[in-house]
Image (tube, rainbow, N blue to C red; front, side):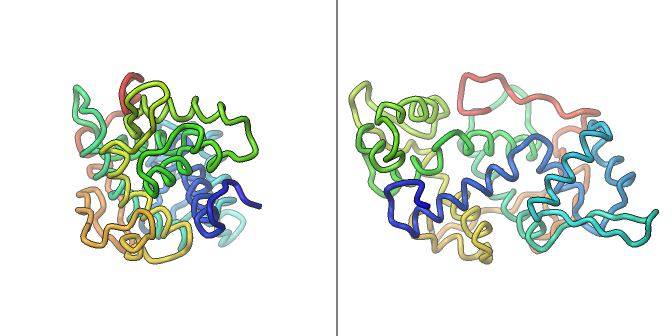
Length: 265
């Protein structure tokens, strides 16, 4: 069933990307995925890598990641159970440094250096705003677009004025610009710079190699090769190291991101 008034292939692409982002954005999901890099772990071994999560929280998170097809639970015996990445989960990890690279270039600079993992989490929060993916797609394809025209394309079954809350949020997040009330909307430099990120998420969500991101029909930038991040040691199947994940500090418990007020969560 169509979500937007865009062509079916584009509509399906946006739906896949929206679902993929919603799958990985919930709090701690990316950290758990990174902690599982390498050989499968027993529950106690994994819990030691994410000590800020209580046992009940970790169990629920693992179940949701298993249900999403990112993590697999293997019961060797009744007393020997391990958790590890599925192929789909392992393929997600090389997408994360692409997100961190965009964040370092386009998000506001904090008062303290942020670990790469917090850069990723902040970026994912912005990209999962309601209707964000569809609005960004249309603006990338069509340049400047009025609010009414965006509403007809992105939410054809809804009252057209409902487009303004998500648009205002994207403006506040620094991904969309406008010259004022009644004026068209367009991507900001940060929004336009999302090409490698959304191209990579699109490729991953469609089960394609990450190398296909540069050929995305909307977000492709064939000349662009995102620089790898230090905290990913192997672009094929990264191995997690605590010192790399928390590249600037290793807090006993992850600290909150900066308060709202700029293009961060």
